[in-house]
Length: 112
Length: 118
Image (tube, rainbow over the protein chains, first blue to last red):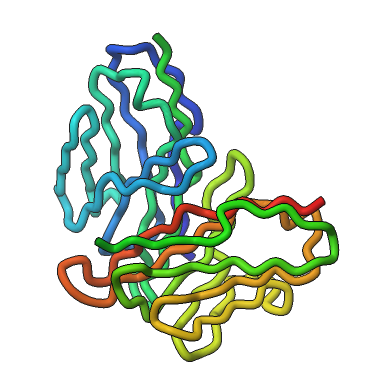
C-alpha cells in the first residue's frame, strides 16, 4: 500500500525567510504532484514532476523530485503572506486507474 | 480548458435525508472520475473511482450502499449520500481524469461541495 508522508505538518514562518517542505512516499511511482489549498476551497495544481531529478519553479516556489530516495521537496524562497495556505503532495499509484494518494498536508502560515 | 464543476457548492440537510452531488467535466470527456472526502484540517481521502458505464470501485472502509455513485455519461458522475448523518458532514471533492491530448491521464479537480448534516 502506497503511503505518503509530509513534514512538517505545520509551518509558521516570517516573510522573507526560506523553507522546505518534504514529501516521502513508500513505493515507486511515475508521477508526483504538488497542490495548494486555501481555506474552504478545492485544490490548485502547482507542479507535476515526472522523472528523477525533475525540478520545476514558479515564482517563489520550487519543487524537485528524487525517485531513488522517494522524496520530493517544495522549497519556498523569500516567503510572502500570500503563500499562506495548505500544501499537499500527491503520488500517483502505478497501475489501476491512476489513483492518487495524498500526503498529510503542510499548513503554511507566513507572518508579516 | 479541463474545467470540472460541482453542484451544489454547499448543502445543509437534516439527518436521515439523502443528498445528491453532481460532478461535471465541462469541456472534456472523462471516462473516469474520482470522489474524495476531506474532513476539517485533514487530507483528501479517496472514496471511490467512478467509471463511465460500469460500477464504481470503492476504497476499503467506504460503504457502497451509503455512498451511491453513478457515472451515466462521459461528462457526469453523481454521488448520493443516503440517509445522511452528522458524521457524514465533510467537504466532498471530485476529480475527472482527462482521457486524451497533452494532459493525458491527468486529474482535474472540482471546486468541492460542503455538506453539513444537522
